[in-house]
Image (cartoon, rainbow, N blue to C red; front, top):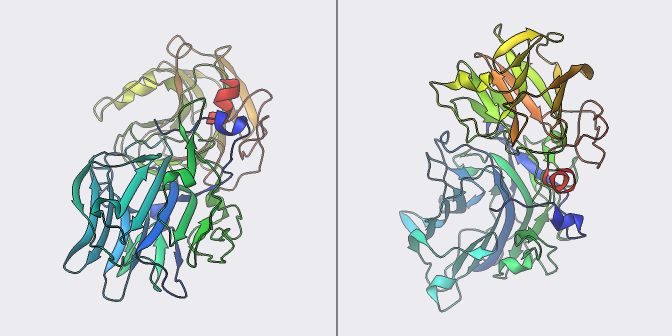
Length: 457
């Protein structure tokens, strides 16, 4: 599994501090036009990606990067997200046909994992199959549903002196926006490199992890670290090839990275509702539509916040439920019958039975959850004020549980904050220094990420 574990940087390894969260609903993308064309035959693109669309809700492809010329000849890699067909495609198109094209046989569906992708081109090579090389998490992809190798000395449509974009498809109008996170985006102009220039296998876990690139970038090369929230498109390569930021703001800078993977809501538990903002905003489109978290702790003490952005008269419910709960559109209500919940009506719901508990809550209130899986208790807070400690029931006091939301019915919407909120918070961190919360984290509780899981889970 490509999920990056905490020990990579806890032991003094290379640390990626920031990523950038792209949201298709906001038409987020980066753009840049090089001053001159670079090497169109030999180049390498490396980047880390955490995709967020579900397996069922993709009517369109999602683009990682793209470039087209005046004749609409274009070059791109793309994440297929139509139905269950989540495959990587890398192609170069010259009307009316593809001059180069690779479609993976393997699918890439995991919305909880970071993937490292390397697209490495060199059309000067005599061996046709070596002219376009695609790597995922350090391993070369060699199985393709379809493959068209470029001719020797072929000039890609990429790396020309025309507009490039990251995070969308720029023909006629920008479409097919990417949903997810990007980190460590690097373009090497004039070299075909392997993944070992950008990553390595962790000797303890055997997992592929980032490392610092120490080579040169070439004329049009760049390195995007997303570390400056006021200038997210800043190039750190030394070339000054900075990108224009379109619709992204400082709130979209995240600490969810390939060296510290944060919890989000899980779109694979799909009930017809919509997840946006990096799987941190959940909006109901029908009755009893719940969402579960991607990280399900079985031990330890954990903290999260949920901002209510819209609520119907019938309510919103925040709580925990067994992670092995599964439902279909015909039995969604069964989820709320397992676990411990705090309802917007002020009641606690324990395995489906509601009794008096705390204050009511509504739009713009923030409900915090302090989950203690060591002592099997849970405390809910409204805007920082404790509503009282509850004992977990038999359905949730053993094994993995998932922090969850349950919205009933449309229209209701909640934004989840596991440490990287899709809204402006107050910069409170946990005791390990992680997270960005609106209220002080209770002593001994931690945000849900892989570094904290390794140390406190």
